[in-house]
Length: 166
Image (tube, rainbow, N blue to C red; front, top):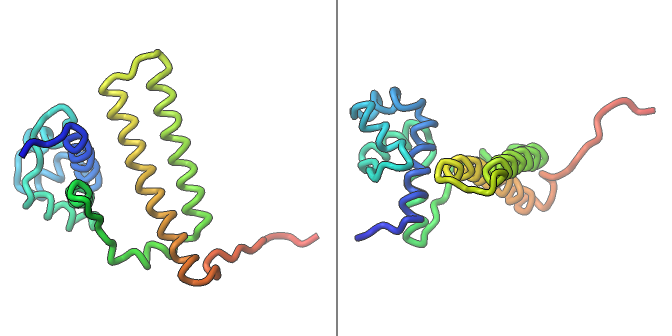
């Protein structure tokens, strides 16, 4: 089976994100029993090597996030569910919204810097993709918070003004 370029780049981005969440190249190498240079190849956006499933499973268990598995499921037209979604959704809706807006601004800035010279290099695409991945995570958090609001009939979105009454 031949991998599409888009799937390959999504998978490589998920691997980089997983390696970063696992503590970087050295900690990942220690955790999965591969050399630092091998993990470095997995982490490189230009190297064609992909992580073996055993390494993905070990790292995702360590981090508690199924980043690579989610990309693989998505490629098959599926979506993963998060068993801890209810706990994560307890985060305040306003906090989730603010974080999403911050991540959006970071993505906008990365894109603006990348196109400012009229060229869009593969390195700039990688930088923008990393910011897009961060915004995806932020947006998923906001959507979980919105689901709690819907499920609770709106009580989770009750806002209060706190401060000095004059």
